Length: 378
Ligand SMILES: Nc1ncnc2c1ncn2[C@@H]1O[C@H](COP(=O)(O)OP(=O)(O)OP(=O)(O)O)[C@@H](O)[C@H]1O
Ligand SMILES: [Mg+2]
Image (cartoon, rainbow, N blue to C red):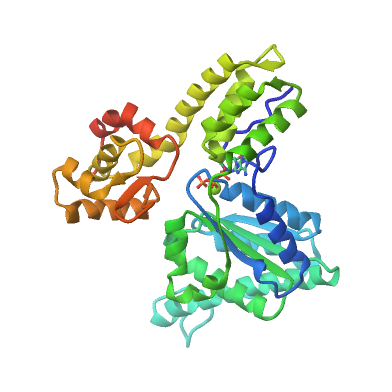
């Protein structure tokens, strides 16, 4: 049997564990009809927690209701791609002509954008282009009682102009009571920047889903179901070990499941010994795929802060970290704040910090020196 676990970012997992309530809420938002508040929503949470997987599942829900679904990632040029996807569908919309993007401003030749006017007009124009394209698509869809879902993954404030245009267009579509839904996703700090943008206040009303880890009993149950329904067996002891090792982190669920399955080749029974080997291998995979890239992007002082934290077995006292760094508390707190903004650490209680991702502490204890010696800005 093919390996049922898929440790690949953005991949739809074989079983979406622990997100039943979110899926149900989204189904209701579509079924309740135009105007339901769940039709404007966002999903946030740390790396590897399952934002993209959930967006994909929302797309499936919409498709099952015969909606059109357009999935985009918010990197440069996404708005143009979106408009293209809206107009190039296999629907009759294709024959309808799109308005030109730029306006001729008081004698200025089209395409020559020197005046202030064109700079400030452009977002409005782009919003209008999007709104028209979506409107035409919806004209066709609504006749058949169908709707349009747009998902936008990895939102970040760096593409704020396009986001503004999209949000403005979307706001109008919603106000016009079109059969539309819009869900975006991103890391907490990125989403926060976007929501704080003065033009994007409208998005603050969006329905918020903050994803966190999945309760271990649910992980346990899912492991049993996936393993047995794919033709292998695992004892309770093995299932306990597997699920505990994940700490509820979706990426680790796929990784450890993948290796346990792969190491059990030629047999139907996943043994405890294999499981332990798989857990070690999965931790290494997590280090390579999640921790290392995350740490590499940090400054040396931020890395030092993390290394100081890794000496503790649980949450660290910020005052203690400052001592270990031999700095005063205000200086240390600059890095604390930066790391919180980067979603690497969080504050579980006043004066305390802890790692956001599972096994980050273990990773730093083992490989911290390596990262510290190699590179680092500042
Ligand atoms: N609810 C879930 N149950 C089981 N596996 C899941 C679940 N959610 C996500 N996964 C798996 O975890 C991994 C990470 O998921 P995903 O890429 O959706 O995370 P993400 O939050 O979008 O991460 P990033 O911030 O890096 O974009 C993937 O392999 C995915 O299949
Ligand atoms: Mg993602």
